[in-house]
Each structure stands twice: as structure tokens, then as C-alpha cells.
Length: 354
Image 1 (cartoon, one colour):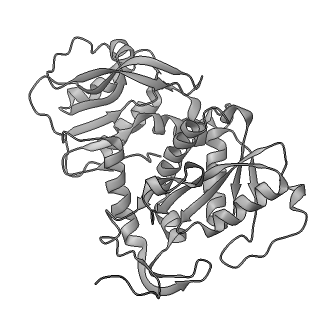
Image 2 (cartoon, rainbow, N blue to C red; image 1 turned 180 degrees about the vertical axis):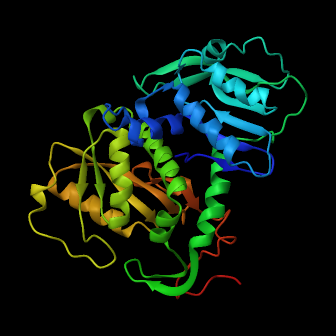
Image 3 (cartoon, rainbow, N blue to C red; image 1 turned 90 degrees about the vertical axis):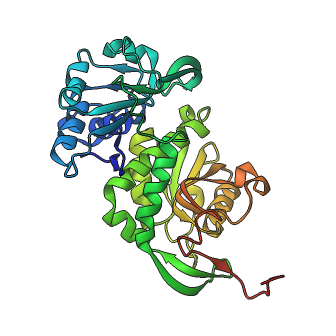
């Protein structure tokens, strides 16, 4: 299953490390092998072949421009370039992004001369050791030598993903002018997150992979101490189960935490004073439910590290939010896009101006 594919008018994009992680952790062929989660860093020929097969089989517009992201790929299987060359021989223009110079050499493409290929030294967080290392990275490396630079100057994986996520989530936002009783505000719209997760499984899996990378980076000094992932709803239990597989972390389920709270007895049996906890949400609107879980963890004596979510709303400036209270999310609804998404938060108070 290919999950990271994004098709635009100008090119087709694949995230190779994501596809390697999905293939090695969730495919039937690898069901009996030891899972490495997101910490696998070697690209296999079979993974690249699956991508090429997908491209050749599902390209009705005959788009001949392809971007392959090598972010987090530190090594490749021997002779994998023979598989990649299939695209070149079929007339595809291929751009490799975020690729290490050593990997370019192993692919045998070092001698390709293209003035648009850009390399630079970068402090790189190694997925395995969690250490910062300096490597020479090609932000863009073209496998062709003409002048057809088919991406925008400000192209980035994040910009591309945000645009795709916004396009998809917009289809699951419904108008509903109703009170948000746990936070005492009015919401003009309702994000049907359950339907979104159900009908956009590939995008959701890609999003959870990206969330796992954010967690690994944000708490790189704590991951080795095995913090516990906490979920508080049915939707977040799906997200947290995949995160657990990708990050090799344990799960704690605190059910019945929501706008109407019903807490069960003896939380001290579930929360340990010696452990650290990351609260996982599907969508954080105003953060009331997250604060409830945070207070429960800290009341028992556990260490609250922070909150992560697929989607969050930004109702304050980043500079006005303490880092420990900030939600790490894959997609933000903020003042740059809430109008287009028809998503507003209001109160009964009068505004100072019209």
C-alpha cells in the first residue's frame, strides 16, 4: 500500500522513508520480522519497486515528472539504482530531495551535472542514535541535465503536505453553529474527524508517520526512557496504536475523558509516578480535554511531557503560548486558513469593532 503519494498539476511526489516504514512494519510479507518502527533507515529495492509499479499503473494523466524524498534515508540496498533507472528509461524526469551526498554516490549519480541541483551542510538528527551529525545534503538533485526545473523556489515537503491535507480535510468540515459546552464558546463548524479517519486511511497513515517523526525529534532525549502514549477517545486510540508501533512505546487508555467527564476509580493503578506521558489527540480545539488528562497525570505524580494531535486550532499567537502547553500537530487551523475552511470560534461578548 502506497500512502505518501501526492499528485499535483506539475509532478507526483513520494516519501521514500515513509513507504519503507509502512512496508517494513505493516505489510504481510514482513509480518514475522522484527519491526524497527520509524528507526529503519535503509531503503530496500522492493519498496522502490512498489512505488514505481504504483506510478506506472496509476498515472492516467501520464505525468512524467516525479519527486522522490530521501529524508531519513541513510543507506540503500545494493544495485537499487537499476530499479530507479526504470523511470529514466521510460522518459520520467526525476528529482531527488533531501538526499545525502553519500547516498547519491552509492546510487552512481554523482557525475550528473545540473546547475539546479543544490547541496549544503546540514545538522542532521540521526534516527537511530538521536545524535546530531553534520552531513552534506542535496536539497534538490535532478536526474536529468536540461533546464526544466519543475518546482517552485519555495518548495518544501511541509508546504506540499499542508496543501494536500487542507484540500482533504475541507471535505469533512460541516457547518454547525453550536455551543462548545466544555469550553463555553460557539463553533461555526464541525470537523467530522471520525469520518475523515475512516475515509482517508492513506493520508491518515502518512500523517501519523509524520507525527511520529515530530515526537521523536521533540522528545529525542526522553524516547529512550520509554514514555507512555496516552489516548482519551476511540479516535485517538487508533492513532496511538500506530504511533506505538512506529515509536516502540507503551500505551495507556484513559477512556471517558471528553466534554462530559466521567472519571473511574483508582487512577493510581494506571498512572505510575516513575513514568513520563505524552497525551495523543485526534483534534485539539481549545485544549480543555487535554488539560484534564494533564492534571490527572500530574495529580497522581506522573510526568507530563506534552500533547500531540493530528489537527489543532491556533487561537493565540505562538509567542503567547508556553512551550510546555503547546500542542504539536500535523496540521493547524489558524488565521491563515480558517476563513477558507469556514471555521470560526465566537463568544456572546461584543467585539470592539465591526
